[in-house]
Length: 448
Ligand code: DOR
Image (cartoon, rainbow, N blue to C red):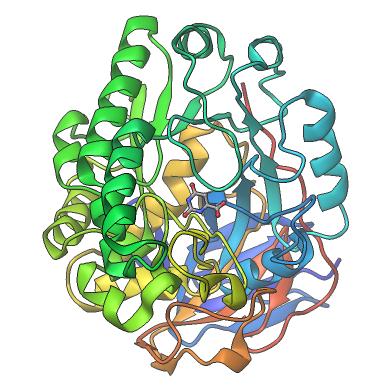
C-alpha cells in the first residue's frame, strides 16, 4: 500500500478549521501537522487550499441488496457514495428478503466484502414476530435495530403494541425508527382516493403523509424510549413541530455523557419543499413527505442549534419508470448519496451552516451515536477515510451519475463545491472524475 502525504489543505475537524498537512500510512492517519516533508516513495497530493474533511458516514441508505438489484446494488451505490465523499454507510433492512435475523445480516456483510467501495454496516430489521432475534442480536454486528413504526417501502410495519414495547425493553443496540402513524395516513389516503382515484397529484403527498402522522408516531416512540430508558434515534425528521420534542444541546455533553434520544434529518428536507412538487413530481415523493418551506427553514436552524444531531441521505433509489406511474403506484424514495455533501455545502454557501457543522452532523455524530470504532474524525491512528472538497461550481448532469437508477433530483442544479478526491482505508478511490482501484470497503466495527 503506497503512503500518501496531503499538503496545503484546510482541515476541518471537531469544530476547528486550520491549514495543515496529513500523512496516511498503512491505511491510517499517521500524522496531522504543518510543514510535513515527503518521505521517499510517498505519493504527495497538493490540496492547494481545498478542504480536507473526515469522510462522511451516512446512517441511512437503501442499497437494495438482496432482491431489488434492478434498482440498485451494493457495488453501484457504494461507487456513487465515494464519488460523493461518503466513505461509510449503514444500510436498511427493507430488502427482499428483509433482514430479520442473524443469518440474513451475515449474508449482507458477505455480499459487501470485496464489492463495496465504502465501509459498511447493516441494520437488523424488526417485525411483528422477530422479537427474539432482536433481543439476541450481537450488538457488535449491527449499528442498530430498525423499526418501521409507519408502513413504507417493503412490508415491515411494526404495529403490535406488545411487540413494540418488547423491542424498546430488550434491544441491545440503539433503536432506529421511521415514525409516521399509518392509520392517520390511511384515513387521508382514502379521502384523496375518493376525490382523484389513482391519479392523485404529487403535490398532495405532504397532505396524505401528513405532519400529524409524523408527530403522533414520534411522540409514541419517545414515550416508549423514556419508559424503558432505551437509546432511540428517530430518523428523517421532516416537520418543525417535532423539533420541540427533542433536547437541544451537543450529542456528547461537557461531562462526557451522551444524549439517549437523538434525531436525524435528511438532505432532501433541507433542499426541497412543497413548491418543488410542480417541477419534480414523484421524483421527490418520499416517506415521510417533503413538507412546507417553513419546515425546511426550521430543520436547518435545528441542525445549527443542535436539536437535530445527525444529517443523512435516506438514499432510496427507484427506477424512473416506477416514478412515472400514477401516484398510488409510484414508489417513495430518491437517490441522493452522490450529491448529498455538495448539497449540504450549499447551506454553507448560503451562510446557514458552517463547514464544521456539516462535518459534525454528517461524520462525527454518526460515529459517536453508533459507537463506530476509529472513524468519523481526523485523528492520528484512525482509519484514513478522507474527502477533499474544492470550492468550485459544478452543474449536476445525468452523465455523471454512478447510481444504478441513473437519475438525480438535483439534475440541472449548480452546486458551489465539488468532491475533488476521496480516500477509504488509506486508498484513494475517487479523483474528482473517476473511480480508482478496487472495492476496499471494510465492515464498520461497533465499539460496545
Ligand atoms: O421514501 C422512502 N423510501 N422512505 C422509506 O421509508 C423507505 C424508502 C425506500 O426503501 O424506498
